[in-house]
Length: 260
Ligand SMILES: NC(=O)c1ccc[n+]([C@@H]2O[C@H](COP(=O)([O-])OP(=O)(O)OC[C@H]3O[C@@H](n4cnc5c(N)ncnc54)[C@H](O)[C@@H]3O)[C@@H](O)[C@H]2O)c1
Image 1 (tube, helix red, strand yellow):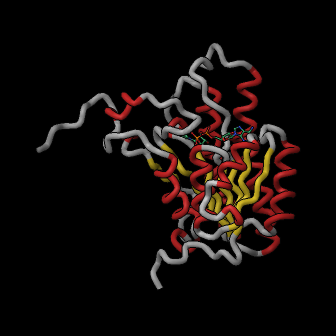
Image 2 (cartoon, protein in one colour):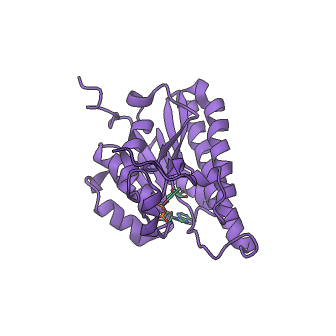
């Protein structure tokens, strides 16, 4: 049997993906149903959830959920809906994040924008991951969680509410990976570079700073996401951060040499 022929166990596995209505979350959720995994597509936008499921390879495996993850009660409702529709959830992807707006710099960002960024990224991510982990521990079943962080967990973005929440998520991944490892639950971070999706208004000029010569697409993230989520392929990987950025993180003030 080929190593890559059965990355998931469709009879047992089920996934929850937040932010599945657009961009990277949508690409990962669609790839999961493409592998036969029953997947809850969670997002605040109903039209986007419906369209994402309809455009997937297996709409029959997609479960819609619509709600505002900035509210703790919505996170509880999501957990309940996932349990009643999917049963035990073995895989979790947290991709939801409010839009980044360049006007929200350090002296401009208002309290509500600051609070919502933290609530959706950090509070919902922790609440959902812990709720799903409790069910897995009770069922004595392994699981795999993947949290979308950012290169801006480590470098400023001129958007302090965003970068600080991503830095918190990066540590949350390590805390959960350390605590949950003994129960067979793996927790990792996926770190995108400049991906032309809804959350980032991409300036094509940025491509010049990217060693692989182009901005990323949401679909560039899905193969790595599924590889890390798969217990068959990455069963001994936890607490790690996987950078998928075309080499953007290598950029500094030295231009690369011409070597041919
Ligand atoms: N695009 C990039 O270049 C990039 C770079 C680094 C990190 N990331 C991270 O990857 C993830 C996905 O980014 P993207 O560019 O695909 O974003 P996106 O804006 O295209 O998608 C985010 C989704 O989250 C949903 N969402 C927002 N607020 C919500 C809420 N309160 N409740 C429920 N759903 C909500 C949106 O409706 C949207 O469908 C984010 O966590 C982002 O921080 C993206």
